[in-house]
Image (spheres, rainbow, N blue to C red):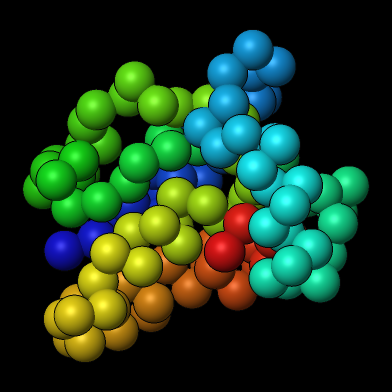
Length: 113
């Protein structure tokens, strides 16, 4: 279901984040990152992200669709978003957590998740 998407997310994260596009507003992150993670925005590892990754935007290819919200976001944001869309289906959530562990378990993902 998500096989191969960690490679797509890694490839996307390797693209230098554009200064003029934000997938997540830094103003919002300045408020919520300290509140929910104990980190500061200065601790964020910024990457390029899709910004709206859910199953409606993924095909079997694997291909990721619907790019109007792409831009700069904390590392791990897309993987965390996909994972959060799956809690009502525990088997899917477990599979996403396992297959995207390489992204979600990295220390720099702590501010993006």
